[in-house]
Length: 216
Image 1 (cartoon, rainbow, N blue to C red):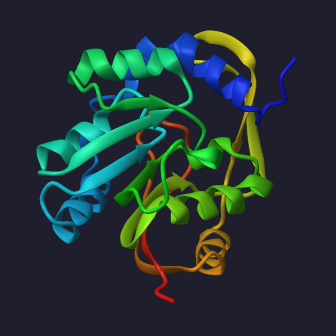
Image 2: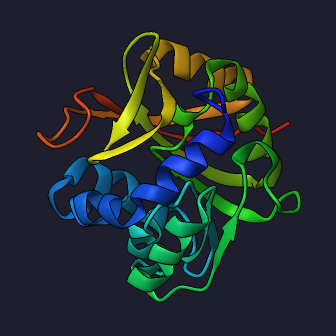
């Protein structure tokens, strides 16, 4: 049986719930102005046509939004079924299956990396590894935007969107904890935003952090 933070457990959870997840969450950007502002800042700060990685892309709504704002987007996700749903929803073929801790891309491949609600599926001990990898695949002047859940400790669930699943874990971060970790991995924080959850979401506050790699 996989451990709650194993990639196998996360992949299985999203494979079985992919269609229901898309139905529940794929249109949320329409009612999330803070999320849109964070994404708009990516489009505003990068030149048109820049290549951006949607890290943990799910059904593709974030990548679709960025593409509509003039960026080229590649989506990466652990769950093959979720990638199929993303392709069906958005028509994009720029999708890949993989783990953010060992991204299948060359160094300096992307002008931007956006991770909306994906790093919480890493154990706290693996965040540093993921940030090192994100910094590797970013161009030296690249942009990294992360959105995740605020709180303390971890949460666990064996039920998701009406499906019984192998127990998966979610890591909740404190604001200072997340910012300190970004800075320790040579990211310069440029903007921080927060919002409260919608009624149908997990009831945690959200944080959005925009950063760039520190220049040597």
